[in-house]
Image (cartoon, rainbow, N blue to C red; front, side, top):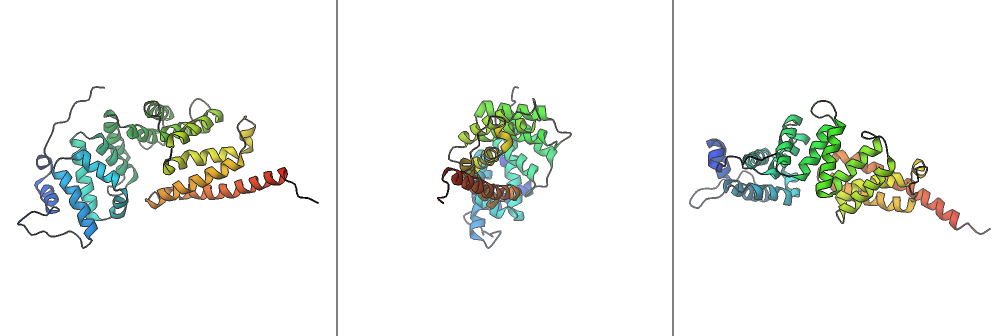
Length: 293
């Protein structure tokens, strides 16, 4: 698809007079009284830095700052002024041609938060981001199709999105999502061996990123202590499963601390998995080293 460059507008041309004046008010100007929007100096300073990037038309730097200071974004996400600034900055970024801004705003509409949840808007923004080569947007569209967020679930389209992202990037997330599709049999029939292989590749792709590794780790751990898997010539390794459940716990706790509370159920699965794996390890050790009578 040929990408038509967007019509470039300056921030002053893009925003309404009211919104532009409000963004300007967040930045101190020499010779003018500065009225901070909050008594929280850190919050005021963060908003000022974001506003400076918006006013300078630096949409890419604006989005990068949101990614870099994820903790601050999470901390201030419920502040009305911050929500307004985020939305305005990202909307300008989309108009300015930033695929990263389109994906970020799409994710906000998908999850809900500083904007009201709207799957149709999320899909539209993901498509814009994908057209600009954003790998995460390809994956995110897979979620839209897999779970039927806009219309009925379409597993074929979801599979193509994950496969395309995996082929182009070799990243952790699309690989374990493909593994899920083979594990559940939603595309091309159920095949646990392919799922296991994809989870292994996904774990390798995560590298030292314990947060990303949590997802393939917990999937592999479950398979390594599942009796049914051994019947399909997959390994039975309680010791490794225990280590993987522990890895998953660490990553999931970090995700939850960042506001992704929907992982609490999976965290409980990791904790229960550790308990089960420990019992299996103990049983194996007792078999290897019988007590002396």
